[in-house]
Length: 152
Image (cartoon, rainbow, N blue to C red; front, top):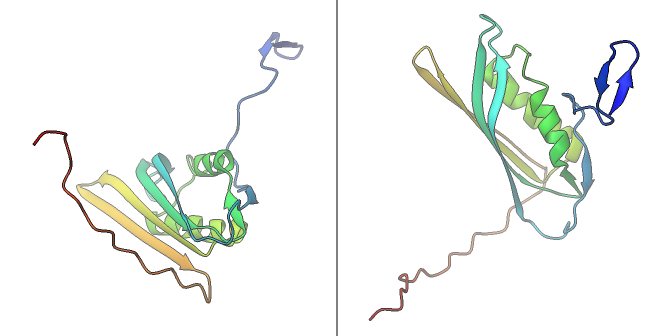
């Protein structure tokens, strides 16, 4: 730690991260394959634009990357950037879809936002994007078997 002359207190060599709207990406390690990436964000917070009261939500982001993947720390800082922002549930959910599409251009992204109760009402918002021309592979149904416990 270094001592700051202006404040006469110790300042960490690497200050903590700060909220940011900058979503960073990296090259998809398997761009020829459709595979699911799921992010769970159980502590999303923003403010009600009418009352200023905090709103809390659990976000699930499901995506199929194309050439780029979203980097996790930047996603964390991005979600944190909403903490003191006033926004309606529907707008926040759709804005996040738009920003992920702008940053990573995925084949598919779906956000499910489960907003915690406010005034006795739970709100769930689902928004998605599909890249033009992308068709998901058909689901393969595998047989199910009884669980084996080693006893006859």
